[in-house]
Length: 134
Image 1: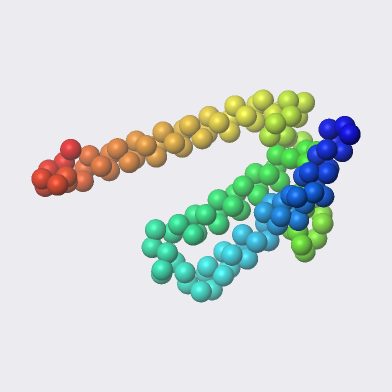
Image 2: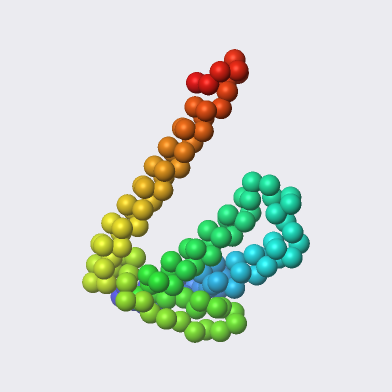
């Protein structure tokens, strides 16, 4: 069994076939966003944890859509089986995989750094248990 047959057996038709299609489709997170809005769950979800989770899921789906060359999933499954093969791969160096890796990881570190700086600044300005800042 060559690597393409193995990928097909595991990733598309095997244990991750239907589940992978559900998790990589834009339909479930968009439906959940609609439910979130219709039920006005923002009132109960004060920290917006559920909202950020669903937005992250949708963002991951969009990123997958833009960075999968040979392992594409249907974007609007189960509504349609339509797929699109990107010219950029998240891993394959023949399709800018190294460049994507460098850019995506640089952005991750920048965002983490910005969040850390924000957290540190906020904790310094908040009064401690003695009523004074840090």
